[in-house]
Structure formats: C-alpha cells, structure tokens
Length: 113
Length: 318
Image (cartoon, rainbow over all chains, first blue to last red; front, side, top):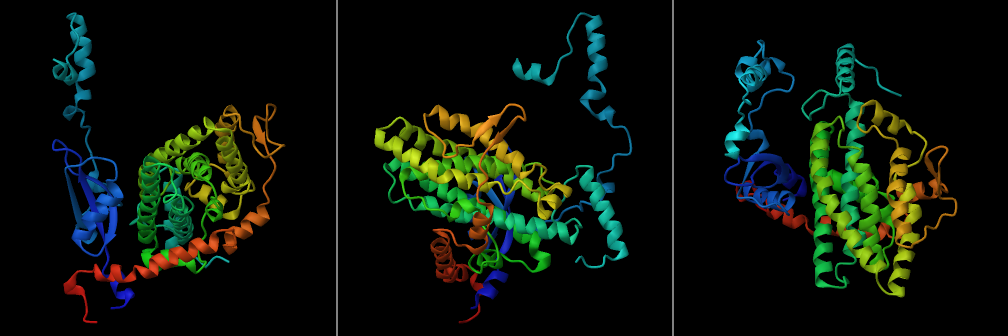
C-alpha cells in the first residue's frame, strides 16, 4: 500500500471530553486518525495530558450534522424574549421588595442555604 | 500581480472585510479571500512546524537531565511541543484543504525547504543551562507572541491557541525552575547560566521579526490575524525580562540596551537581520540540517506504522 492511499484513509475526528459525571461532554478539538480506536488514543495524548476526565467521545467529522454559520435566520429571535429570562423580572422585583424592606432572593441564595 | 477578481467575488470580499472590521470571527467553512487563506496557512504552518522543530533543542537534554524529576519535566515539555504541532497542523490542513494541502505535505515541506521555522530552533543547546534558558526566555518570548494572537480573526486558530497558551505557562514555570536552581547554585552553575543567556540573547531579538512592517505583516493586520507589530511584542518582552535577568545578578550582552524614559521604549543593538534571515530561509544554522534530517528520518521511518494503522477492511492486498 502506498502512503498516498493511507493519507486518504486518515480522517478528522471531533473530540468531546466529559470532565466529570455532572457535566456534559464538551467539544475540545479534533485529531486526524486512521480509525476510531486510534482517534481515542490520539485524543487522550493530544488533549488530556494533564486534565482528568471520565469519558471521551470521538465522532468522525463527516458524521456531524451542523447548522450553517451563514444561516442567521436559524438563530433569529424576532421577539423581545425578556419574559423568558430572569432579567425580565429581577430589577422590578428587587425595587418592589425594597419597599417591603426585603432583599429579592436569587438562585445563589438558595444554593447557599 | 493579483489575479482579476470576479464581480461576485468582489461583493463577497467586501462583505468579508466588513465582517473583519466588525470584529467577527471567521470559521473554516466560511467564504474567505484566497489571500487570507494563503497568508494564514503559511503562518499557521510555520507556527506548527516551529512547535515540532522546537522539541529538538530540548529533547537533546532528555537523556542527560540531572535528575529523574528534571527528566520527566523535560519529557512532558517535549511531548507538549509535538502535541501543539499536531493541533496546529490540524487547523492548517483544514484551512489548506481547498488548496490540496494534506498533513503529509505540511510535514514534508520541512525537509523540502518549503516552510520555515523559528530562528531559535536552529541553534545549539550545548549545556543544561540552555535547556533552562529555552524554557525561560524562548518560551517567554513565544507566550508574548502567542497571547497577541488570541483575539485573531480566524476562530479555529484562536481556539487552539487558548489551549496552547495554557500549556506554555507550564513551560515557562518549568524553565524558570531550572534557571532559578542554577542562579542559586555554585559559581560554575551561575557561569553556565550567564553563558547560556549570552548565547541566546541576540536570537531573541530576531525571534520577533524585523521592526519594519513587511507586506505580510501589513496583511496580517488588515485581516486582523494579528494586531500588534513585531516591535511592540519585542518591547513587551524586554520590559518583562530585562529586569528579571538583572535581578538574578546576570548581565546581558548588549551594551546599547537601555530604557529610554523620554520615548518610553527600549533601545538595543539591532541584530544582524540579514544574517539571521538567511539562516532561517536557507536552513543554514548550526543545527538546522541535523534536526531536519532527524525529522525526515522520523517521518519516513514511521511511514509503515501510519500505513499499518489503517483499518484492515480498507487495506489493499500488498
């Protein structure tokens, strides 16, 4: 087998690392490899020399379905979505709570309890 | 001579430049002018190849490291450099794919003289202090050059640089650990450190490139690939490192080096730009040919491994 052929059989694999069980896998980069098994080894050697992780996925790049960077419409938000967000309410609530001599509660307060 | 631009490309070019000027980031799949692709490709290839060739001056010290801990530290640094090379070549091969660029061509360009690598990696590292000074000052210079690229307009490059810079900070600490041990050591160790600083100093001036703004530097700025000039980076390096060298009681081999309060800049003796430039272009430094030969040997000697790793269903009968 000639090298030229071998090169054509090396493929980019995107690498997703799960750093701990309470995190989703994160995309961290890509490697060029001849098989999924070697891609996993390359991912460990290239992208996990120091950090600890619990799991790695490699996915052949041509198997990924993605949006187009040029397709702004896909991400369009035609309406004001403040009614969906914390900041759509928090300032107003805080002002009102102040009148009742209370401080508005935030998620951090609950986590701190 | 630039080729005639098709009218539809002209509109695309205008939109592309508008995106650059708005500070938007470019992805590999976006339309980009040929000039942008080529200049980035050349730059990222040179960066990747320099990472790989940068492993050589230090790997020479792996078998001779003074302690096991030093040996392990140095080995991991060498591994990082080669790893950085691989990450960068991934970015380069994706960018260069429309031009027929492959991993194979990016690597073989090294020994066919079709790409360059940083001047510092053509030089000898004759003592253990050189291994330390490379980590301390050469990696220090590299971090200054690389952090200036973090906000680059080409997003895939920026993402990889973020990871590289984090690891370079390990290299810096590692190098400093070596030189600080020598600085606190015997008279001979201090002399060895001073000699290594003397050996590397002029090459570090050259490392950042000439103060004149070349055509390619101009394009890099126009496309917001890098926004700082060579001279700005060199000045930053001098501000950071000259006081540190002096605080160790070491001297620098440049009698013209001083901080000019009036202009708020460092004055220094210009390195021999012509001589260094020729060395990098022609790979005619003291160690260039030896290290390029090692790279070729590794690439060609391991070809059978790369071929054997291909999945067996795809493997043709020999």
